[in-house]
Image 1 (cartoon, rainbow over the protein chains, first blue to last red):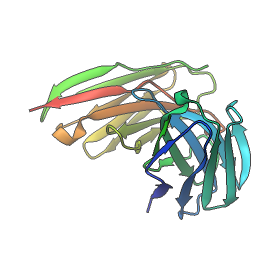
Image 2 (image 1 turned 45 degrees about the horizontal axis):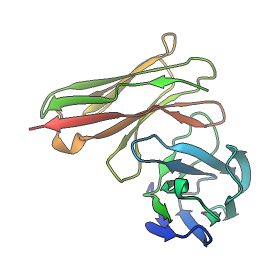
Image 3 (image 1 turned 120 degrees about the vertical axis):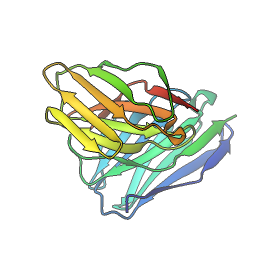
Amino acid sequence: DTEVTQTPKHLVMGMTNKKSLKCEQHMGHRAMYWYKQKAKKPPELMFVYSYEKLSINESVPSRFSPECPNSSLLNLHLHALQPEDSALYLCASSQALGGGETQYFGPGTRLLVL
Amino acid sequence: GQNIDQPTEMTATEGAIVQINCTYQTSGFNGLFWYQQHAGEAPTFLSYNVLDGLEEKGRFSSFLSRSKGYSYLLLKELQMKDSASYLCAQTDSWGKLQFGAGTQVVVTP
């Protein structure tokens, strides 16, 4: 089983709203990732968690706030977003953090900021 | 940053073979992944190469030459469902994936 689930599938929010994206995996993976993907562009890494601790933050604006409450769950809290933040947000997980580890992606949350 | 180059688009007919080339910078290299992504869907893992040579998985094969900073993905016996974007991605020792822009493969009847 290589399933990563994400909710919601679609989200529309205003610039003053606060919302959260959720990601879950039950593969026992200890590394989890958030990516942002704009149309016709490749995914761009935002954050990496390893053993529930933030390992990498790719200089993401503070209006995006990640959280890893336990080894199976990863959240991305959104506040005061801009229209240019509209994108597909992908969660991924891998067994551990390291160069040879395959990342498995969830289906994504398509976010529209109005 | 790391430059990963792959063609923007390739077109081939059903049953044919297509080879997607990818070049990358060799500094900090720790492996090369290929992912398939259908429009509006998540990337799905196809292959991983860290040593030189060819890895074969059914209709898909991937090749790596570390000294040349070069990889290719070979798709054989093309099917309509293979129409998708194919992403080449280099990984470093941390496991950070740096994706190429993707190659859109169009399979025609």
